[in-house]
Length: 235
Image 1 (cartoon, helix red, strand yellow):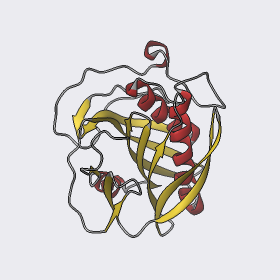
Image 2 (cartoon, helix red, strand yellow; image 1 turned 120 degrees about the vertical axis):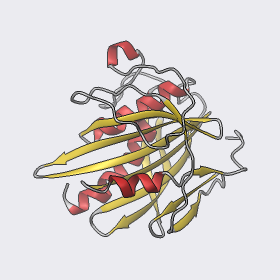
Image 3 (cartoon, one colour; image 1 turned 45 degrees about the vertical axis):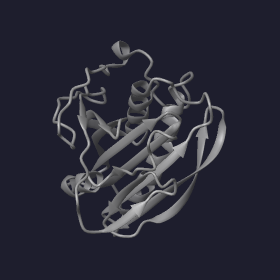
Image 4 (tube, helix red, strand yellow; image 1 turned 180 degrees about the vertical axis):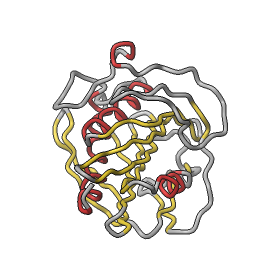
């Protein structure tokens, strides 16, 4: 990964996750893998189990096949940094520094829409972002598991990454998926960690992406994600 590709890749992931989840409600679109039959795509539905593991568990994966997932409760972790409150006031997450708003144009099957991400760049080595997006009615699959897996697989595939770890999670009753991936760009390689939730028509996503060897910092960032009392399933 070249230095500038870290920030570009992070911004691209925002749009790709939003786009990928929307594609779960329709036909295949523009290179985004649509997960409609888990038996055919290699992604397996998992039974929901109650555990207290905030990070993805190690699992074996081959090439770009989707990894099996299990559910766990997300528990926020305290850390120093900039405590960011979402514009929707329904979650907080702590960045290493103050993030900047970044407007994005996201192509959906129903047309282009505007979105906004908040991105913090740690020099040229890493970038952290979070975003919340409300889909138009009927543009996202009503099954949150399908929407989550499609968002995950579409984002990883479209940045040329390989899924490493994946686990269904839950926070404040909202279903989500936590996953890790690798990206190889020429002689350079990088890692990414992500946490995505779907609550009705609302998509919450937080990512950290950068050169290899930073997964501990990336996971520490995601571990600070916490829904607030304003969430309460009102999306």
